[in-house]
Length: 146
Image (cartoon, rainbow, N blue to C red; front, side, top):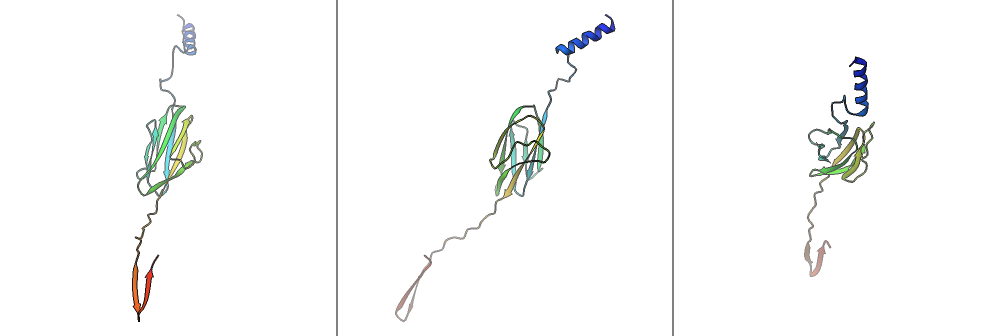
């Protein structure tokens, strides 16, 4: 065969999909999760891949196949509460609001932020009930806090 014929055969095989020049790797899209706020907690994904722990790294990323349905779940640690989801500037974030679960389909590179805040611990004073009787020159005085 002549080189021209081999080239034509090669081009036809490429066009028909019989031959591929790609590495066989499907394209991926990246989901970045940032953790903000003074509180602590964890953000995990389903399918697995994202597990951001607020106290250790403040953010993470993972590559998924395009059009993957994603569920992100925010799990506040003790003495913290989940404040909500927000987009990150320059991203196509699809998580907003206060719900701890965020569901979306990842179609392109995207970023989202989860905010955790510290829960102020209120120190409760025990309720004290008292009753005291005082006698002044045969006058009875009853003092209560009810």
